[in-house]
Amino acid sequence: MQTIEKAVTMTENNETTTDRAGVRAKDHASMAVVLAAASIAWFTWGHQGGEISGWLEAGMGAGLLALIAAIVVMRGIRVAPSLAFDPAIRKVYWTSVIAEIVLIVGGVIVLNLIGQSAYLSTWTLAIVGLHFLPFVKAFRAPLLRWTAVACVVVAGIALWAGLAGWAPAPTIAGAGGGLVLLGFALLLMREARSQRPAMPVS
Image (cartoon, rainbow, N blue to C red; front, side, top):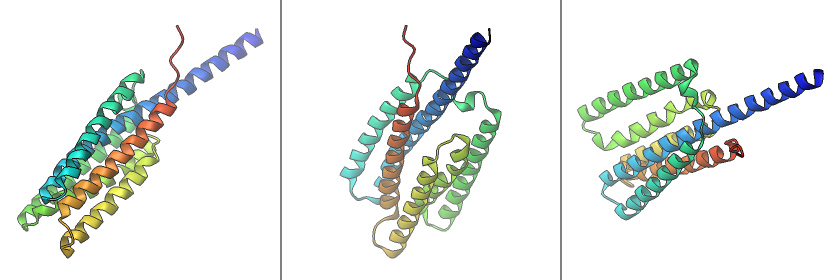
């Protein structure tokens, strides 16, 4: 009897571990989808600078391919993401997203009022990057910390480039932000693929 109970306990523990791995993989794949889609938006926004259009279009194409691949990976992980069942994570997520929207809209209003609309993509990139920070712990995704840092760094370079006249801020924010978001989307996708539980053999 003790042997049977021990076997049942071990099976339950293995199932719990598998479920947790599946949820984490689903979360990472979901974030890969978001980042890949955002990379397309930033490569598109980069056209506002009027330079390197060919490279930006190539980036948009790469972002689209990454988005399709991330969706395939996400749909292949047949468990619910954390947002579907964890109210604490939902609270962190929506608080961060609402703060992000408020700050972006506020920045848009101010920049338009002072006639500096060329820096809209720069400001937005910095805020988008910062809004990833609360997700690092919530979704157990350390990569998002470096995504945030990279976004802020690129935004700072875009601001400097625009003010110094070295290059249009939208070009730097669009191309740089697109590359950062695309790169981390690919890394998150790789993590999701490596973490997803094996499909049961029928």
